[in-house]
Image 1 (tube, one colour):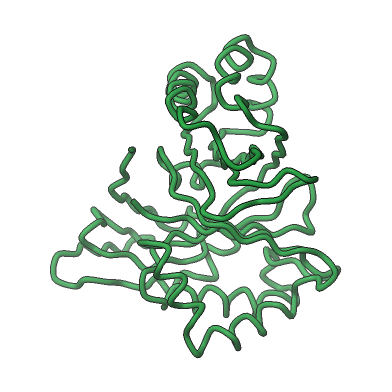
Image 2 (cartoon, helix red, strand yellow):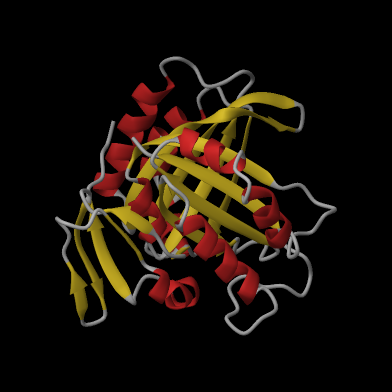
Length: 267
């Protein structure tokens, strides 16, 4: 099971990480080039919150959390963070968390709109939480109009929100449009089955992003086919490929410049 690193950056006024011609573009490209070269990095997605475009959400897929910890302990990490924080608002909090997801997290990021929801618990979710949560989400996936995929998991770290402290549950849902989710919220299907998701939680926060792939370094044992426009690569001899040449395209134009199919696992 891969580990997903969620980082929420408050961005300084005047910087837009999604603007190819903006002041942030060289720094974002540096982030992509640095991160995709790190051992254990499987892929990276990012997007601005639709509700608050001053918040930039970065989602990094690691083969395991230890790979990220090793990067944090390495010599290049300090200078990398220093460069990145040139676009980060120093007066607001940066949030960074690790989650092992049940479901298909990559498919939720690949959807046109990704909903992220945090459920806050005192201490953590109940021991039987995922029995009901996964049953709910599987039912939604079968019946909800416009829902592409789901993923749900518990943070490694304790999260504190308005006096509530404990491990949070993070839900990621891939939707065709934000409006599909708004309409779904009005249905009995949402209201009845959704009780399992909020069970035991003290608070919920949620938002949307349009996530784009920011480049990736993939183990070809898990890649079925990678296509770059008219150029295709199939791998059984070369172990790893880096998609450096399409960073700028995918960073600003989404994943339409290439397609890839990987093996995903549900637990």
